[in-house]
Amino acid sequence: NFDYNNDGTIVAYKGQSEKIAIPTDIEGVKITKIDENAFEECRSLQSVHVPVGTQRIANKAFKDAKLSAIYIPPTVIHIGMEEGNRFSREETFGYILIPKDFTIYCTAGSVAMEYARKKRVIKNQKKSYR
Image (cartoon, rainbow, N blue to C red; front, side, top):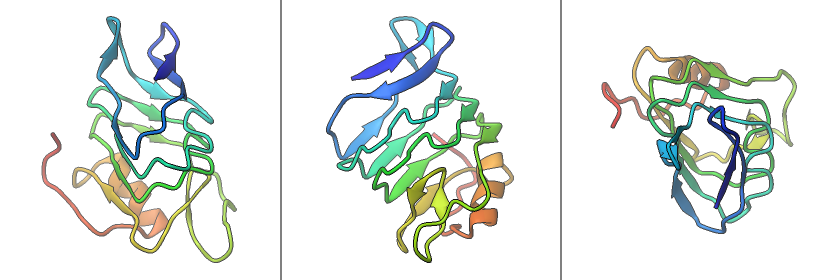
């Protein structure tokens, strides 16, 4: 259900699942990035587990998705963050609406933790990531 490039970039998700775990590799290609609009309008998607080894999550990677949780490993060193991405009075993750119960699961001290602090969505901190 994933379209990807040979450089390890997820470019599109074609499934309808509510919860997914992006694989660490697809056909021997290690996943290192989630591209812009990769999960655009995945309205049934509620939870995403980003694999260890992923380094970048692009701006708008989850545009118009309806996520309630995302698991981000400490290997992520960049999360796209454009200023002014607001819908109503809610904050956004990339371009997704962040509901009040949205949770970012991440490792303390990681880039994901800093992102969560900036977006004010820190609820759960874990000392390790699996």
